[in-house]
Length: 272
Image (cartoon, rainbow, N blue to C red; front, top):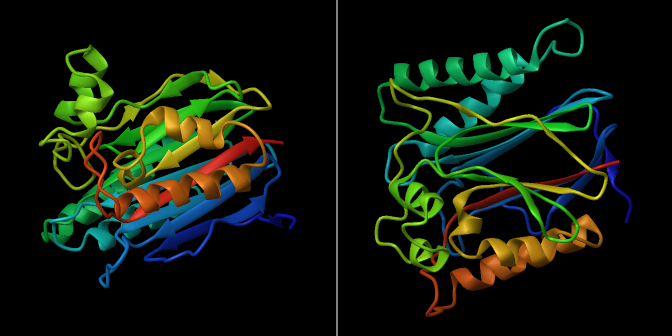
């Protein structure tokens, strides 16, 4: 099956895919997927966006509405809609994508706060321009850029106590996966002192794979399992295999991880 061409923004919220959708862009190929937790009857609180800017630039985003807080799905939807609106004329105006992305996030934060409902969401954004990557994030959703031989070229650090402890070497990945406070986060969209962490500009090679995902993926697969699944071979096949493994783990107890059902959303991308 060939990819469908995508030239206009794609925004998905409260979706329940059975398998990834795939699209051909001017800059590369992308797969998208979002589903409710197995057995869940309420809304999928995750959202995603694929926003083509021009023939050299694209913006990708994943948001995970915070469980346990009111209207998580509303918060994740708002941030995607504000990002899309902010970037709407990016291809026509000589404006910085960085500024437009940050404006969209700031407007979303203000709008969520104005609801006074306690709504909140995590967010990861990837700006791909002239074959280079720059990331933006708040919370514990993930971005990983990997080479086809499995080398991690860049990954975001979760804004959480366990994320910081893992990065500093105080705990290992297995301890982080099983930590009782794994789901506590210290920064997200929907708080007055929200901050956006901006990553460095990183060149991308033709065989690199970029992944954005909500924590439904990282809670059920270790990083090396994720990388091994998607780093090589057809992007759709690898993404489908990875998602199948993650969703199977949600329903099966394993001694080396605290797997649990969760909404799961991801985007995978490769340059043309």
